[in-house]
Length: 207
Image 1: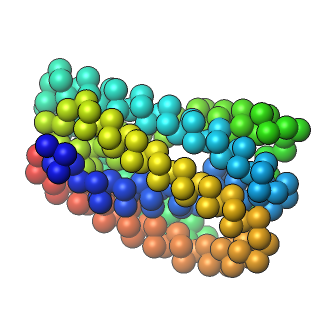
Image 2 (image 1 turned 30 degrees about the vertical axis):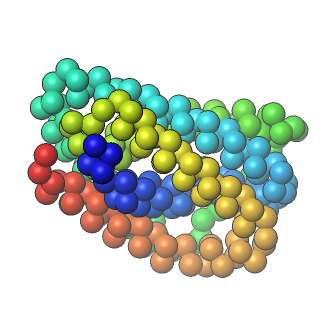
């Protein structure tokens, strides 16, 4: 049944990962600031398509794994927990590192080119599929049907669209950028704590 899937936990973990500072979010912010909202939104569309591609690939692989051998889901749980703890360590290191993040603008001559660069940016990031594998193992039970797994893909995808679009709109305002960069270390500290809790919780979870 649909309530077997822990949507609040899945969406919370996905929100933290998507909203945290990274190559995609910094590129969106930099492009919005340097080239305007329209160019940033074109970049967002490419990034979102790349994200959906990895999400679908992870979901298909997860479904096949669960249908073949349920015990392999336990292995995926440990791998997912390890990756979440790695993200916690990475965020903590960023929070403890002095200085501010550098915004990188993606230069493109057209909206189509911006879309292509956003798509390439996400498709060439194999860590994305590790994240989605970890994400599905957090809140999707072994008994989940293909339809249930698909519902997770759709929900996470729609949330990502909202977050990345918000970045494109908000970071076209220079004052928003200044405030974010000034408080970046505090944000990263909060992300480190959230990833750590999710990773430990996943290790303690009983299937």
